[in-house]
Image (cartoon, rainbow, N blue to C red; front, side, top):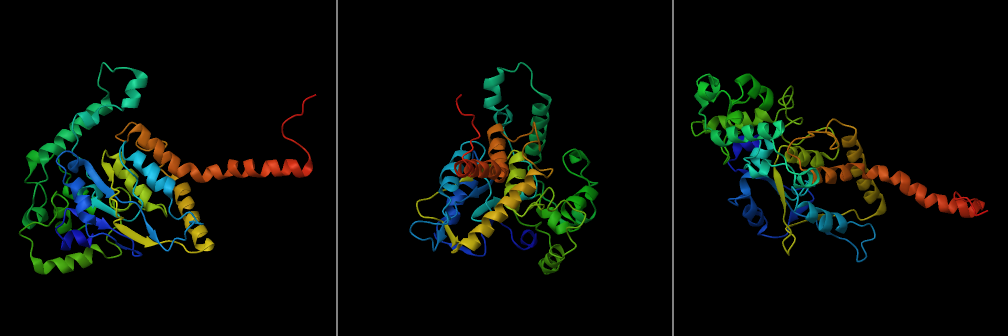
Length: 341
């Protein structure tokens, strides 16, 4: 949050501490999508594939994850976009703040899969009309800019925009008790109100990163990086897609970011266990893709992809049975399939 007070960029780059820039053109690659006239206003992030150093010739621990990064993520790029994988990702600041994207009427049409299965629709659904109304309100608002006096006095002076803006109390509950930070969230191009005193920014930055600032706010629940799972990256991207944002998968010939991969079996197993634990946590949480935001802006095939991501640890049970049963049958000379009489 302190970056919103001290910096003025509309975009954020997230890279793990054990990753580094492998290409000087990385940010330019992301900006080509973020600043696209057609897609930029509804793009929440640009995700780069993970690439690693120190992998042996035969990749004995499957660190490259070729199926996921080179096949699955490419496929998702043709639906609503790839998942957020926790590093090598450039974010739209407005998406992290929990705002809805600026969508066109075509974006709010029902899924093509649903239309093809159920036929044409003679009447617009209630959810479609609600989404359309929210989109029109957000388009008309065009991110108002406030000065410090306006923020401190509340938003009573903006009666004509009351239907578009939350009350001051709701803003504090959502973003916390920082007028400067709250004002910065309304600025689509980043930055802070011009009338802000630069001398107070450091004090405000210390305030927003304090341990108790997020208490009784929506940070970690609806906005920012979402808490509740050790794989918070999947949860964060899922919440953005559920609001209607799209994401982009960028795979330039030269990897833009590289990191360190597990070099022994123990580290690799710990990593896989952590991913599986995070998926199961999401499966049994209120954010489970099977039912969360059903009927909203998350596309059907994108939902199926997220479901596949969180249920894969459960598939280990039938796989174990599939591998163990034949061995038991051979050793005991008893078969699960009845012999011909």
